[in-house]
Image 1: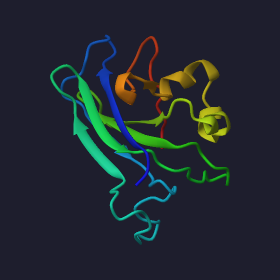
Image 2: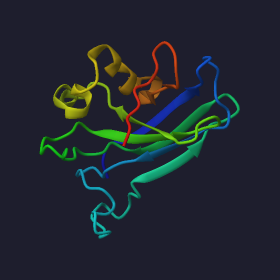
Image 3: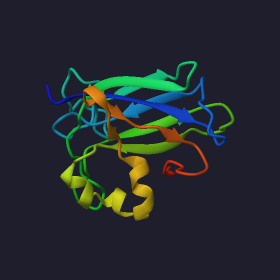
Image 4: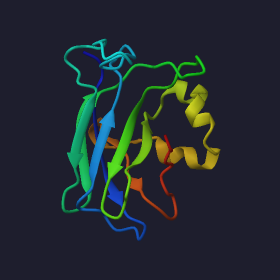
Length: 154
């Protein structure tokens, strides 16, 4: 169940060129804000949702996946986070993958999300998808340069 979403975008390198050989990986909670397993490895989420996906980019650097909009999960501070997808990008030239987040447009709880609040206001838009045609969410990842996507270290 839940609101079905399609997300698509392009991965751009530091020169602004599409990356044809990247891999985009997502991790997410189910519609009730539960991850597939708890810290002890016990199943907790909707059995129909894996909570994980991985897709390669095509020759034009584009990726696309379909999922459901996740519910809100608790931040370590105890505050509820806005619905989001955790995103990991693997690509040539990186010794380690980069971590980011995709937030949903027109989501009221974005205003109180503790992670978004920690990001400088002018850079937050790099984490929020845009509504494209046919309700597809569009979210490009820019590895460096102007409009570089915000990345997190874990």
